[in-house]
Length: 258
Image (cartoon, rainbow, N blue to C red):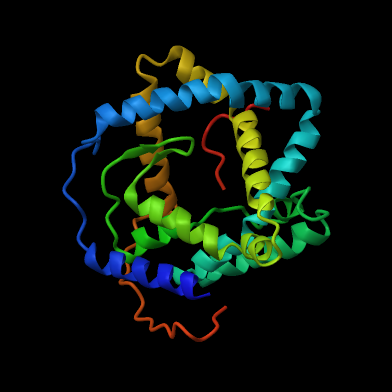
């Protein structure tokens, strides 16, 4: 719990120090040479491992089963979405998130189905990278991470905080099930590669510059998520104080493969 509070404090300081938007060019890619090299490495990993796994996955499982697994994995991210809804002061969206989780975890059989959407409770995604943006933190330069792909310093911090605040990951660490987050990550990666199979193949095959196309898509997608497809939200970081010894408590933008 000390480590969790430490991450939260660092993130708040980061947001407070980066309250002014950064003046960047349209590409915001000062490390392009290095990023292209990492992108090339990731492409090799995709061609040798992820793409074959996704092809096999699509070939063995009928579309309704694939869709169910995708829904189930999405349902497992609900606690992170709910936490960040609340950190952003989005109480109405938090209520939608909680209602979706209750409906899909029961009527939807642990999230395998998505009856909540049919009932009018639309899916949305939130993460701590978006929360930092809402608090005023600049994104920093575009970077490409080995294996994980497109990112920026703000989203790297967000990814780390999301990992340590995920209740399932906490459960795995506290019960010596260290393999669980790895297995979940692998399944999620294969599911995502299969879900966006056709769109990724189109970028790799038909784009004059797949690296630039992916960079453009990533930045537009993140900006859209931060704005909730409305006017951009900016708020000051909440004035929180942590006692280090005390205990404390969706994205369907690419063309779908199915």
